[in-house]
Amino acid sequence: MSTVTDSLIFRGIFSTEESSRIWSDSKRTEKYLEFEAALANVQGRLGVIPQRAADAIQTKCRLEVIDMGELAVKTQQIGYPVLPLVKQLVDLVNEVEPGLGEWVHWGATTQDVTDTATILQLRDTLEIVEQTLDDIIAALRELSLAHASTPMAARSNLQQAVPMTFGFKMARLLATFLRHKQRLSEFRPRLLVLEFGGAVGTLATLADTGVALDSGVPDIAWHTERDRIAEVGAFLAMVTGTCAKFALDVKLLMQTEVGEVSEPFYPHRGSSSTMPQKRNPISCVYITAMASTVRQLSASLFEAMVEDHERSTGPWEIEWIVLPQICTLGHSTLVQTRDLVRGLEVHPEAMRRNLDLTRGAIVSEAAMMKLGAVIGRQKAHDLIYDECQKLGGTEGVSKQLVDLLAENETVRKAGIGRKELEDICDPVKYLGLSEDMVRRVLEQ
Image 1 (tube, rainbow, N blue to C red):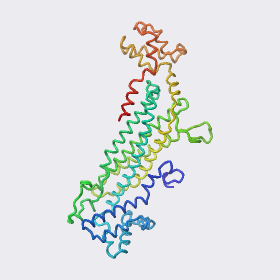
Image 2 (cartoon, rainbow, N blue to C red):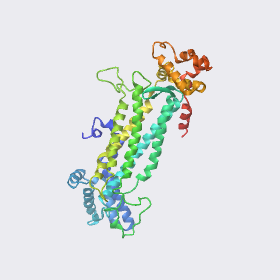
Image 3 (cartoon, rainbow, N blue to C red):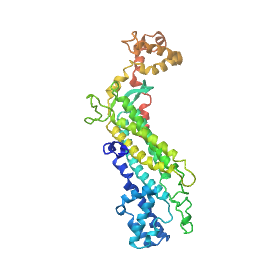
Image 4 (spheres, helix red, strand yellow):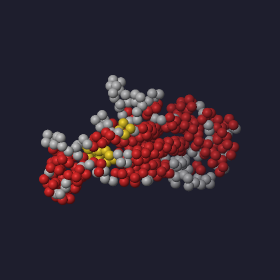
């Protein structure tokens, strides 16, 4: 094992079968062969190379005729896999008819093949990423709708703030994932472009053949302009960052003393080897670790943007090291998040219990605003502040905020009676536009 994504034990956690297949040696080599076959096909049709050569090249661009062992040995010797692969293709095509193999890889360079293959791998990766995003979005829609009216305490600086609904919390997350889906659709056309420029990008070897650049390819070569690749890394860093934010919230809400949600239950999932009662937030643990790693690795893609002149000396190879890990870890993070959202256990009774923990202090803002309209906001703030302090001391140990306010002379003089105070101090009646905002997001 060189990385956890290669591990027989860990690869099912830190990668997925689909993403690992995309970034395998065999799939990468298949993409190289796809490039060579497509190049020969087009050049044969345009008369750039003999049609006989084009046909023969296409018949040999199959993974099963490639000696992968030899390719590995020669790659170590040469430093790049494209040239030894091309040499194998030349020999294979020459077996069809001597001399035809010389038309293999006509006018192309190593980076043309490598970059185009990488783009194809990223294309396939983004397809499974999008599918998983859709699954997460669908599951969040269900949670948002089901709990649009479920009251809970919002937290600010890890302290109870004011009431909101759990559906509001989920709809806020849903809106973020919808923006990620939009980002994906926006940058995908910028990413999915061919790299074919020859030695330094000028296509000098084919300039006098009459071959015209089609609108389906970039306007100019991008051998050392790596913004497309960095953008993919930035996207995966953002989307997994959102997953990690959700995982952090779940971890905090799963704490024994809070108990408002739980990860999906499977026998012994998240168990401790020594504490039988434990039910650890294991999915959240992995989401946190993988998302953090994706963020760190994606920073390397910004380093890889700093490339010298028209063909670089080192930064390009950074992409080879980190892209497979970013993509496999990124997709696994999304899959873990999807399963977490789909199976999330919500405990409304615990949410209600925690709303009542402060004996009404959680709606002190509501009381302050109501009283502030009569005596002034700052005066009301100070008065409510003093009354809330009593809730934590011996004076108010058996009382609710509504009791203390009803006894307060200033509140009585303001004309706010007990019945009105009970309405003001009911957390379920201070949810703001939580439900309306849930509906707005669901309508997108």
